[in-house]
Amino acid sequence: MSKEEKSKNTTGALARFGSGGDLRPVEDRNEYDRRLKSLPAGKKELAEESARFADLCQYFERQRMDVPVEILAELGRASRLAIPERIEAMKKLNQRLMEYLNDAGEGHFVRQ
Image 1 (cartoon, one colour):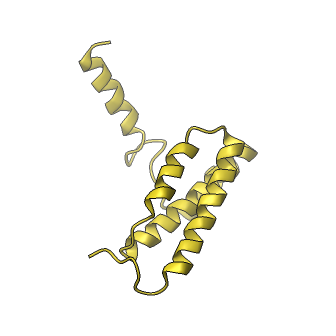
Image 2 (cartoon, one colour):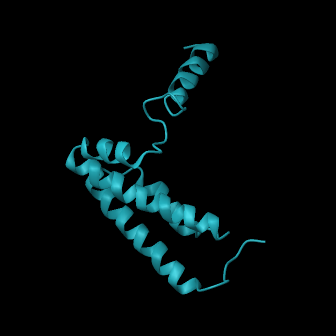
Image 3 (cartoon, helix red, strand yellow):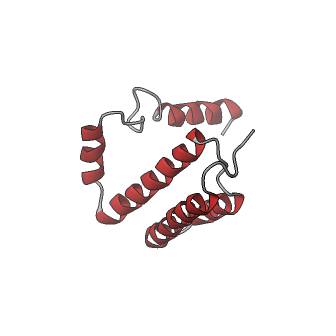
């Protein structure tokens, strides 16, 4: 495959995440719930745990806090697991993030 063909395939794949694509961000809560309900049980639970992780990361960003590097490294490893193991890994990562927030307390670990 030529560089031009690879670039075209990559651009096409990324377009699915754009405003008109089928994998675009979902703004409407009802649309989100409808999509979630349409998933098979394992994928649904993984989507819920992944959404919790994303929500926690957004909270960290709003508080100008860094997500611990070791949690990000574990997230990378979890992405290569089978779905049942990935669900358990995401639950553990979410728990660790919550514990980290609790331990950090008000005003600690703030980015400058």
